Image (tube, rainbow, N blue to C red; front, side, top):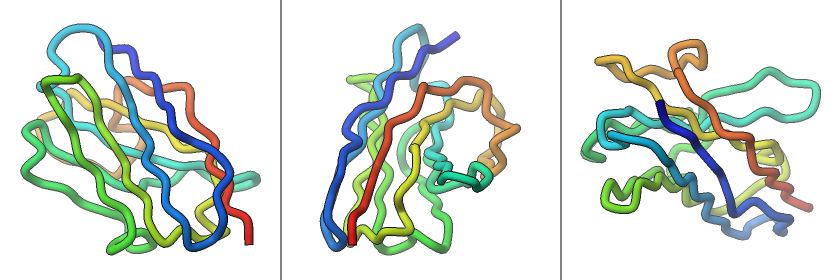
Length: 124
């Protein structure tokens, strides 16, 4: 089992940048595929970015491609989401999630563990 705690969310102006962190406790962090999801008010949770166990492969939602970067440091049991060129429509609660499965996924049902979320608000 793994416990996840996000941090780094805050209010930022449009065009600005933020870096979210997700610290994992428990064993074998490097065996989990990791993902970031977000949920805006009144909307369903959506996939943002994913990364494989070694960090060599990343994938993104079209809406954030070229602006967001996911990375991980297995020595620190942490996954990051660097967000640049932020837009008001990026405003949401951001969640990190861990997946035990053998393949990558953009579906939230495929992830086994979730953090409590971190609020990101982008003002126009």
